[in-house]
Image (cartoon, rainbow, N blue to C red; front, side, top):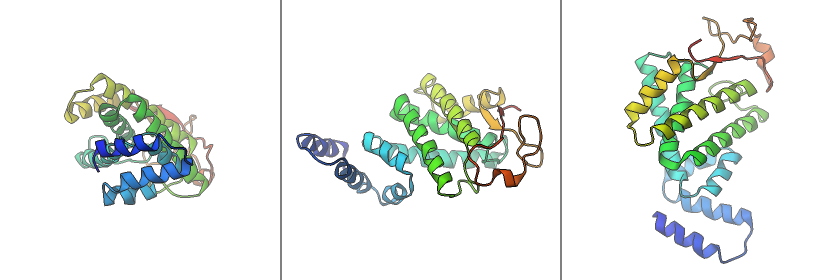
Length: 221
């Protein structure tokens, strides 16, 4: 369904009084009818992200495609090997979030990108409460703070290089990563999480805890 057709439907609905849940259902049906893949992915996203779709119905499909592209780019960077393959608090994880936000900022705007990033992190908190894994582990507060920090860097780069190519965005973010402008979680050479006093955090103390003692450090640590 085209954007013009969607706008026509929403315009007609504005003239009526109806329940918000009913309106959200209409938004979902209109969006997911555009693509089977979009329909399947929508069912998997968190409630906060679905609310984001409600407020950004014309940007949702583009955001979905950009999110998929960010995952592919992250995998390509991992295979290249320059920043390792740590997608759980490492440099690769930091790059992924910043690139995602930079791409979203270019295509759907700064405010929409930031609000989607926040919705994603709210979804991670719900994931934690449901004891569901993200990238193999339960999410926690330091990981969420890391993501939000890197999101803001991505938005800044996306705004500054609004018309730049994907290649230039990647180059700028890798440079930011090397200069310590992003954030990662402190670990030792064996991949153990460290607290800010450089002590290994026992794995048992990380289980089912939102407020963990993981330590955020500059990305060139």
